[in-house]
Image 1 (cartoon, rainbow, N blue to C red):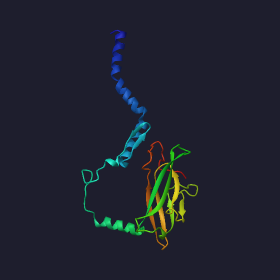
Image 2: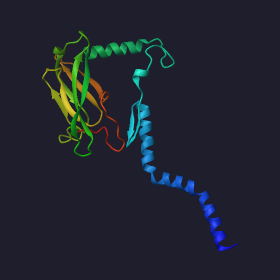
Image 3: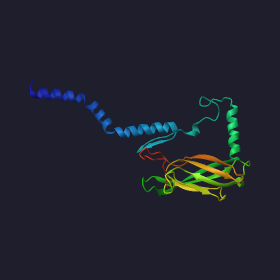
Image 4: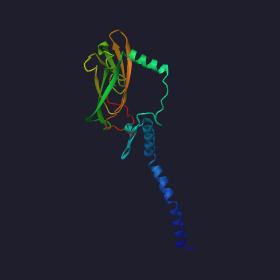
Length: 218
């Protein structure tokens, strides 16, 4: 077999491995981004929310498409007494007062990661006409250790004694977080309310490239 013939046969043999080699080379080179996409996809599927990674965007569940009556999606079963008692207990312990929030996107960007900053308002409302904000003496709001880290490693609490606008407090964040509020009543009792401060209704999208995506501004 001549040198040219041998070289030709070798090239043909290598050609058969070109696509597998290219595939495994692609997987090896983009290993971390692919794993990030899969992890983010799994997280978003669990949350039923949208996924955005670079130019790739997968829309989450559209609630408008959900049926409003019993169907294959819903199954109506009899409620138990325990869940009813827990509901009544919650109404009673919070004196028919509940924690709500509003979120508005600002024009600002976070100084460290460039994420859009959102303005969050948190305040109390009464359940229809059954509660009275006059029963409230003060509210301690806590948004987590990333708020007020200059005061302590656990962050800061925000004490509101002014009853104007439902004992409202405002803060800024670039990602959703849990808010806990210890509400003190004039009769000497207190109760801890909680509210997950989601950004639904805005154009917020979870970014897996931000390690502390739930870590908000101080």
